[in-house]
Length: 186
Image (cartoon, rainbow, N blue to C red):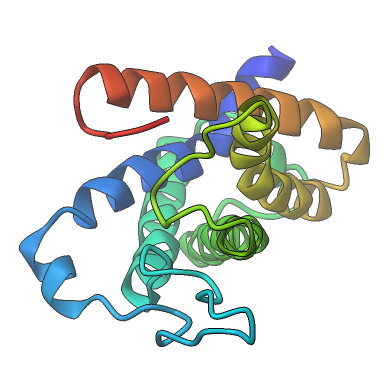
């Protein structure tokens, strides 16, 4: 029951991430994309974050997570963040927005590091460090949402289990989307 409740708690981010990825393939998104770093290059001549981290993508992730959190709240599904707070539309919208914001915020250091290492936006590393970056790519954003969940639920003993569950789910969802040809790389 604990794992099921944890899974329901991260579900708004899973569904929000899938919706956001599909949205980022839309003509609307493509015509309104503006990089978060506005094309800024650092002294090393490399972009701060790259073209794939956009203002539109950042904001749409927040909106999608909020909407899915509201829907999950309306369905009354068991959720770790309802232990301290009332299950209201306002709370769910704010909690979803916070989950989406932290998911995106915790993605940024990884993008920054990849640009420093010369890895192009949307690409993966092609070396013996590939496994390390695949793990980092799966748990960076998950760490942000685990932090939000633990703050809202006051269940700090679940911080690492949330990272593990979220990381494995992130990998499974990405492998599934790769198989369905929705994603181009892992």
